[in-house]
Amino acid sequence: MLLHRIEEVREQVSAWKKEGLTVGLVPTMGALHAGHLSLIKKAKEACDKVVVSDFVNPIQFGPSEDFDKYPRTLDADMELCNKEGVDIVFAPSANEMYGEGQKLSNDNLTYVCPPFFYVNTLCGKTRTGHFDGVCTVVLKLFNIVQPDYAFFGQKDAQQVIIIKKMVKDLNVPIKIVQCPIIREESGLALSSRNKYLSEEGKKDALVLSKILNNIKSCYEKGITDVEALKETAYNFLTEKHNMEYLEIVDKDTLENKTNADDNSIALIACRVENVRLIDNIYLK
Ligand code: PAF
Image: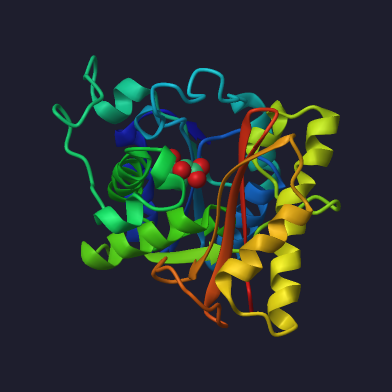
């Protein structure tokens, strides 16, 4: 069932809750691919009813980012969701989410602002305000749907860590379920932004997973010095890759490490054909 209005979602979910049914939410920006479908499948296994939100959230995009050109494929998304047995696809307009004619800025709207350290490292270094926008819309979706569980992909590892922190700090009574990264056979992590890449760009983009896999195998061979592990990336990079960051940090707190350990995660952001791609890997 496709719903556009907050009130309609609330009514339906509260009817389910009265019947004692559990509800899972899969927040998305649409342009659904096999990565999203894996979240939906997990949600279907764990919950009686599943809601997928399909909303390209304007307040998590910077002024020079790809909000306007971000793929919007609601019909195809609906088809996939119907096939997976999703109960509600919630596809609100920006007016429905933020109020008719509202100026979308934090001198006008209440924003959720996670701690400075979490939002200003890794992706946050170049995407000012991004995680405030993400947390704000995610908390709004949580309040609208009031699910028991919400499902997020490890592909956006920093996002999941920040959402878990928000849920803990603000006592949000929802269990966050993190699901593994889904990759093409080639190793490329699935992303809605892969649609921007040419065939050649897709091949060049394999460098991200190659760098991460190589770091993991070096770690397994006993190299723990973070700088030495990061250095190995230069064996893979060419002039086609514009690396934004490569970091090895604590997988729960994002804190930097001098020496990697079993609690470490390696994360990379790199532009290929000017498309910003991210990927990550747990060292254990
Ligand atoms: O990961 C995403 O697609 C978005 O950041 C999310 C969580 C749906 C919020 O808009």
